[in-house]
Image (cartoon, rainbow, N blue to C red; front, side, top):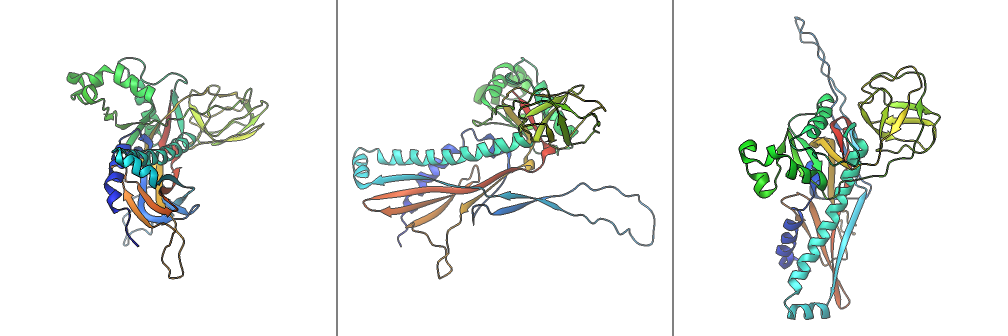
Length: 388
């Protein structure tokens, strides 16, 4: 079988380099498990979660204490998406555009659009997973962060949530939508004044870089989900201790949705809902749960307004797994497919590996750009929302 894609590889890589520099903030911020291995749709991959461990007293003895055993848990991640983008040409189309000198440029841009489509879908999955699993939120709905000149309180306050929750300090990321980034670039003079910032990167290139311990990224897929319709809900009068995540609600009506930001009377913390309700019942908050105890009295719950969900997180709290789609195995035990040729192309910037296949058809050919992936938030304590 002739290798029909070798000559196309430079075109594919040129397209990848273009797309990998677009607004893919969540892919940049997430921990990525990407390889040329193939995976089946709905295949599970386990992400290990190492638990906290207590300290023991140092007591002199003949032998060391018999301690140190741990049960390392895991969070299953599912390859729940397997998609391709087709690019089809017939001979007449190729000949006409080749004669006009346009075929190569159009084909390059088609690959660019294919990679853009697939990476944007992954970016959306990561964005949704992040805001639905966030521990708490700060900020004001419908008001883009960093809007007050010379004020970095927004990054400081979202950082405080992660600090309070014990998030690691070495690999923190802040993924912002376009409105928040515009405020940083236009209003935070301490960052673009060279004598104060110590660099002209923001002034000359628009690059924010590090901000108060965060690696700052921009995304074109920041989410603004519609809030639930819940109103007049109150807790029971049982009282709930700090750390409680399951909160029973009585009276009231309407929906409280996963990802909604809620507050309780007497507590300024903004909690993110993991499991909601459509009628009186129990909601579940993301970990670490309540920061302030709810008293032994019916306490009003308020569902926050619809807001843009900028995200702060530790890299390992947000996971993206990508694989090449699984192909069937023939009688000889080798993978087989109708494609005349299949190559794996790894983007050196985003580290995502794509399959590119070509299918010869009647008087035409079709390229398939394809990939399988799964996205998940595996550590709620290490994710926070910056509302906007």
